[in-house]
Image (cartoon, rainbow, N blue to C red; front, side, top):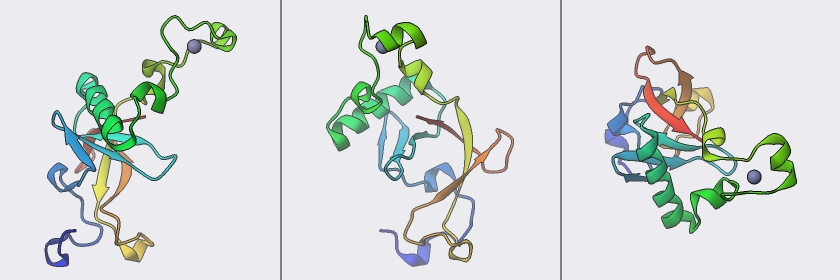
Length: 135
Ligand SMILES: [Zn+2]
């Protein structure tokens, strides 16, 4: 827990270094939001590193593989539903790489000050935008 004295002001745009992840692997900051929310890889669009970081994060924190976590099809899948609509693959599951602006929580906007950060969807040229891949 960071002491209040060095926490950024509420609503401040955070730099990549200020976005506290749950873990960092291969230089990729990984965070899973609440249940049912996306798994985030923060600070890169390099899918090879992202997938490696997610795999390690899930193994260490959840004891499962990326394949199980995302309910991906097995190689040579023969499920009838898949034959018709295509298999659930990593490529079809990962969201398009995007950009987010992370901010310190602002209680004036009903945000929980206990949270490390909040984020908003952004564009590449938005001030403070950080590359993110989510699934
Ligand atoms: Zn399948």
